[in-house]
Image (tube, rainbow, N blue to C red; front, top):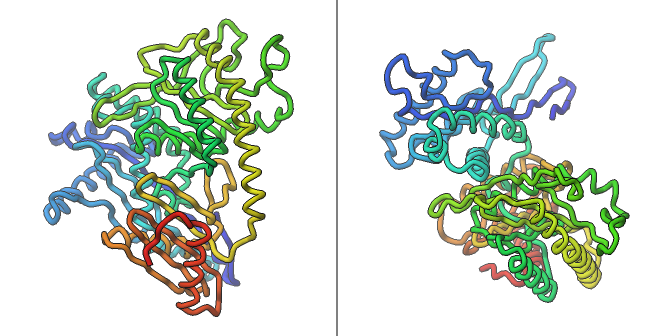
Length: 474
């Protein structure tokens, strides 16, 4: 992420993760037992006393801020070099993430001089990233408390180590922005008829595969239908679109033209395959192992097997009770029933989508870019983000503009009323934020000579064309 600019050879260093740790102050209450509080610490090679010191410091900060605000302890601490984020997802379990501030590196008399940019990071963005770390852990492991019940501190430490060792490598802190705050879901636009076809497909599948508890249906990495609770779907959606699907992209692009099962006699040609579970159904030794997920952890606490099955651009997730281990026979049955129907359905959706696209006319490059989010159904839409790499959604606008969006969002979260904020950025861009009921819209316009009235008109036009069925209050 280093960019050189100017004659003085300035270099910008992106924010990086300095440390990440989880502790419980109740586990080592006595002096000399401080190490027992630490459940997970990254980077692990840090000297023991330094780990104890850092955890102790966080405890002190949390206790100190409690005196001013007993119900809402500290969320973040700003220092010159870094910023610390605190989150208590379960009682007495604290997660802390320390992020180094971005740096501008200059050279004076041949020596590097570092300037820390203390105001660049947005608290709300990185606090959300920290909360997602917990949600993602919980999706695959259940709560911290469950691990303690299953086998005490030892089991919890093992699970944390196994999960976060991998997960922390996937945090791209330099490209975190407003979308991480929303953690929304992108929905696939569909006409009623195709939607009904999908609905009836799901009903048929749940009937023939009677052990299925929940189903979710995605097309082109966008959600069409889900039977899960919103918060569970939101984090499962993030896992599917940033981790599971990208890992399976390459092999798919290679063999796009031939159905995978053409050689089997009497079989309807279909493109279906398991993304989780057995690789080869013809192998009698094939392992039917599926990842476990935990949903509804607040009240009923359900443990499920996650079966993800894909044909062309359509993917369907079947979730079945974890107490029933899926057999190879079940997997073959699922493959023979779901495969052909999903293949046909995927072609239908594709065809319908292309027809609708033709009718609505070719999309011209608009003069504005926007992010839209609806808190009620978590629907999210962004024309600012280009998916450059599978796991990182990169913004196509200058970081300064993204920061303004984040600031507007923070202002919105302080008030309950509808409001509109218009900002003229230094770079001749206009940034407009609208909050109406449960919806938020952020627009970036590149119109140098426009005045407030014209900007307002443009945004009205955008609302009329893009969101004609959504009522924005004027």
